Image 1 (cartoon, rainbow, N blue to C red):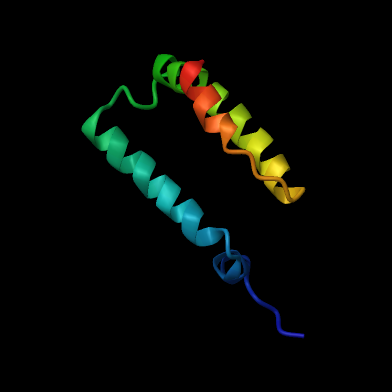
Image 2 (tube, helix red, strand yellow):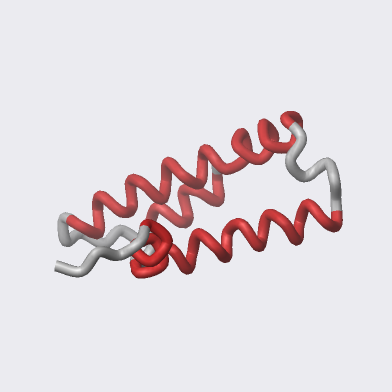
Length: 79
């Protein structure tokens, strides 16, 4: 059994690439606007994305059970 370092094991994980891209994206947005990581902006962002996140969660549950419902998109437009 080979003894890999912690960094080698982290880089080998499939989640490593998207995580690095997320950190780079946050750094770029913070570079353009230093209020990007302010508590007020994070609170506003979370408040506006909760509704979309809940709908995405419900659609994920539907799709994993084999159902497909297109009416959710039109109902989301009315809300």
